[in-house]
Length: 312
Image (cartoon, rainbow, N blue to C red):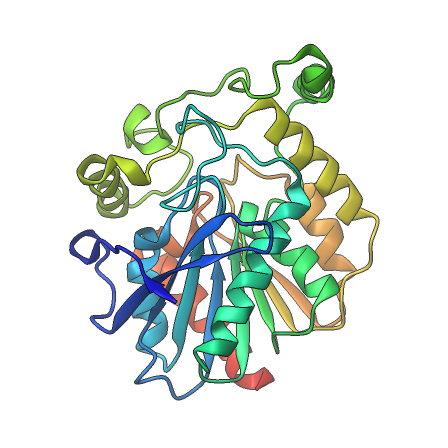
């Protein structure tokens, strides 16, 4: 695999880190990285980031996992980070079909196999990565246990917004506007467009500054709002997955009590019916529970790694 750039100076991750380019089966170039492989004693976490995210954002999470004996492999999904962007306006998040992300999963797993990453393997998936990861664990058997944080198994919308926005998104291809930015979103990435006060990601000002600094220093990492076609694909995928049963795989899901981005009802319904699954509400947390204050983040990390260790 060809070496890829990685901005270690803003990641705050383990020093043992390597990044590569790989290609999905449909030719899209993707960026992967692995942290703390040499010191891993308990296996490898396959980390599925959320929409707009990139490898460097999970440096601190990788450090937390490394301290507990796990290597971490993460990916820049197609259309974000340094992986191939899919529209001429690289600020807009886009995917042709939501199931195309499964090509990225397959490329990631193939790379993990080629690198002989320490087993057992576990899945840790956030937000949009939780949607991608849910399909992956339904259709693949690569991991021994899985954990989700703020998973996008539905998108938080008012009934009116869901009806009008969903209809517009569905009609966007026919109207020839599927590439356009979805209403109420911005081309500028969230952490640059919004101040810390009132943000929907974290209550930790240091973590918010960490995310802001990454996108300010390396703007090529940043991504703005989604395209109308992405919204249509995401809504279709979450509806399709909601009709399918959960796998019989140990699972823990964590949501902030102030969650305002993903659909909490969909998460509760899924976890109520998940064999060997648990759902934990993190009091006071926003969407990104792994990037919250240490008092919230550390117990979540401990619970996730305890689940993984117990399932091994």
